[in-house]
Image (cartoon, rainbow, N blue to C red; front, side):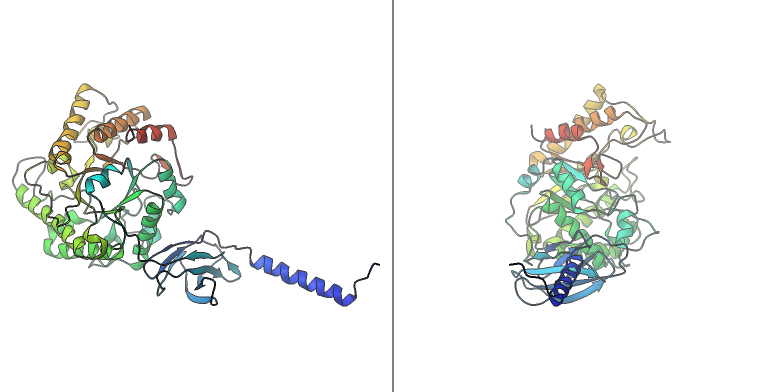
Length: 456
C-alpha cells in the first residue's frame, strides 16, 4: 500500500537537504595546499594563497580527542605553531572567513637525527649536485620581506613540487645559497620569518631524498671584513650561531658551508705579486676557523655535522697554495669547496671585455690539458689525503655560444670531476636547465646523460 508524504514530512526533508547542502558547501575546502613539517615541540605550516583573503586563522586540536582551538592569525601563507608535545599527533586546518582548508595531521618530534659516518662516504654518496641559484641569495634595496627577497632576481616562489622535480631528475644533493644578512639587522639578527622559510625549503630538499648544502652566500663579507674585521667577525659568528641553533637536531644529510667566493683584493692583488698575500689568507683562514668553532660548540648534532670549507675566492690555485689552511676540527668531518668556471672567457663572457675576448668554442687539446691539470690538483692535494672535494659551482653560460658547446663543456667537467672522486654541483638559476614553473628540466636527455656520469 502506498503512503503519501505529509506536508510536515516534506518540509522536514527540504530542511535537511538545505542543511546538508550548506555543510557540503562549507566543506569544499577552498583553501588548498596545506602541508607542514614537524619539528621539536612545534610545526611549520604552509598553504596556497587565496586572493580574497586578508588574513588566515590557524586551528589545531589533538588528533582523535579534544576540540578545535584557535592558534592565532596571520596575513602570510605560512605559520609556526609552538608549545606542542613531542610524540603527540595534532590536526590543523586554516580558515579565512567562510573559506577553509582540509586538515593535516602532524606529530612534533625532536628533529632529524641519526648516526654520522665519514665525510668521505657522505660526499661519495652525493652523486651529481645542483644549486637553487638566484633565489634566497638575492640582494637589493627594493624589497623588505622574505617573499620579496626570494623573488627579487626572477625566481617564482619556491614550492615543494619544484624541489621534488630536481630530485626526480636524479640529483643527489642541492646546494641552497642564502644571503642571511640582507634582511637582518646591523648585528646579524635573522628575522624569524626568513629563518622559518629557509627551514621549510631545507625540509623539502631532505624530504625529496636529496642532501642539502646550506651556505652563507652574498653577505658582503669581502668588503665588511676588510673595513672592520673584529666587528664583522662578531656578526658572522652571530649568523652561524642562529643557523646552528635552528638546525642542530638535523641529521647528517644537512651540511653547512662556511661562505661563498670571499677574498680581500684590497689587501692582496691576486693577479700580481705576493705583497699582502699572507695577511689576506690569515684573515680568511681565521674566518673559516670561527665557522668551525661556532658550529661545533652549538650543541646537538652540530658536534658531528659535515662542514664544507670554502677556499679563498673558491679558486683551485688558492686552495692549493701554501697560505691556505684547513681549520682545526675536533670531529674531523670537513670537505673543501672550490668553483670551476674555466676558461672564464668561455663560461662567463657573452661579449668581449677589457680583460678577455669572449670564446664560443670548446674542446682543444689545450682545453683538456687545463681541465685535467686543475682536477688533478684537487685530487692530489685533497681527495688523496682524505679531504673530500665538492665543486660547489660550475657552469657555462651566455647566448653567444651554441647549446652543444655548453653541454659538452658541462659533461667534460663533470666527467673529469667524478673520475677523481670529486662531487660537481651545477649552478642553475631561472632560465637555465630547470623550468621552475613546470617543475621539469628543459632538456631531460641532457640531464640524464649528466646524471649517468656519476653512476658509471
